[in-house]
Figure 1 (cartoon, rainbow, N blue to C red):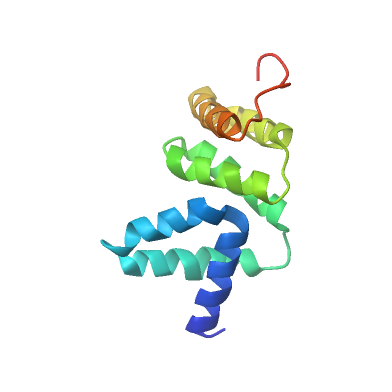
Figure 2 (cartoon, one colour):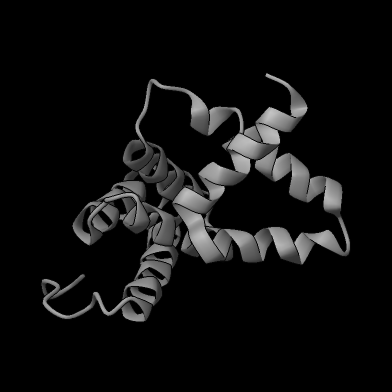
Length: 134
């Protein structure tokens, strides 16, 4: 795939998943590191997200899990929780993936991830009706 195709397809995939939040990330990099902005578009979204073996909800749940497990990526986690919701994941699936990370990444990482999820859910009006304790 040519560099221009990778960029064009990557930008379209970024828009599909992350919408305005993705644009803000790319825009924030333009003044200081435009090459990093291009890499973000071309590699993850132009190459990896184009692969057919996982659908977008599966990819976003895997990304939420990874960012939760890292434990120090709350801004990126918020973007990808929004992205997961944008591509059809439910809040219950997102909560369950974050709970699963308590086993593998520890309770502090899961608690931080859940705090980020709660913020995203509140922004989107999705806190009403959630089970107690979530």
